Amino acid sequence: MVSLEEAAIARPHPSELLTLVQQAEKQRDRRPLGYERLIGTWRLLWVANARKRRGRGVQMGSGQYLPGWLGITLTYTPAQRVENRVQLGLWSLTLSGPVRCAAAPNILAFDFTELHLQWGNRTLYRGAMRGGSIAEAQFPEKPLREQAFFVYFYVGTRAIAARGRGGGLALWHR
Image (cartoon, rainbow, N blue to C red; front, side, top):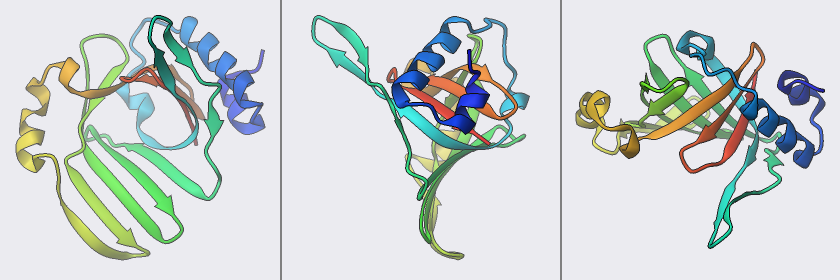
């Protein structure tokens, strides 16, 4: 069986990758993976959306790779902050804010409180969003059900995989 790290390089058919990701989720280790292992920049490679069907529960799409010309990265810092950056040519949109490890193992809650828009090296806008510093101060006390989060089930040296609050799956690589 191919590992998720190997799959991030080999890029199998999206439906094959969905199977690999789901197998990794079933075989996950319930012990905490550790925030320190997430620190760094990860490029989003593949996503699969969860579709809720009335009377049929949740159905996963086969997933899709992101095109190479679209750069979406997630950066976790030692200061427990996250940056989610979307880069399209010279345009760059970065959302950033605090993160925290929830009581349940491998759940990482986050909130975006700052927006930064750039054209090349030129900042066009930088400012607070969604309550800014007030929301950031209240973030640690907010219940998990009111926050966005990822449940990480695979953290390797070259790839990470998680399920989002909405039920979708994602695979990032370095």
